[in-house]
Amino acid sequence: MYISSQGGVDGISAIADDYLTVDHCVITNFWDCGIKLAPSTSLAAAVSDTVVQYCGYGIYADNANQLLLAIHRCRIEYGLNAGIWIGRARGVSIHDTTVNLAGYGIRVAGSAAALYATQLAIEGGVVSNANYGLYVVDASSVSVHNMTVTSCSTGGGDENHWTHLYRELLHLQQRHGSASRSW
Image (cartoon, rainbow, N blue to C red; front, side, top):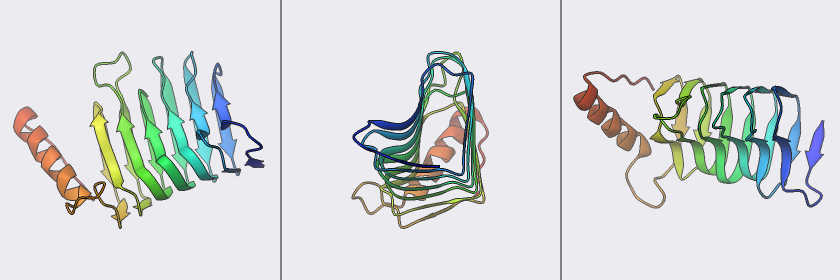
């Protein structure tokens, strides 16, 4: 399916669904979100083999209730604000997904104190040409394996974002006694 903006705000928007599957779609030219997952109820969603391009946010997910999200083999390009923006979500997995040319490649802005604390697992994939490759504001758990981040800056600074992330992991290790990294 090919979904192109004809003046609409969002390509696909889940407002009050129980389950949503987006598979083999091209979603393009929406000024807010290509895929917006911000329902008022619990939601389980799967996005696979999909291209989202030229949108404010490629995939935006935030829910005060329980939100489970799986993103597999997707390509997200030209996300003005973020390729993938994760707010409060109980369980999010991102596998073999490419994010290119975005303000934030993958931004996690969850709440560790929320009823459903944000948990994210990334396995494989690439983030390139973004201001921030992986930017974590607050989450209870983030696991990253076999991910490539290339040609990303920290919003104009010279410091490599992975160096910043490693410093944050060291800080967590000092504060909590353990931390891990694998990239």
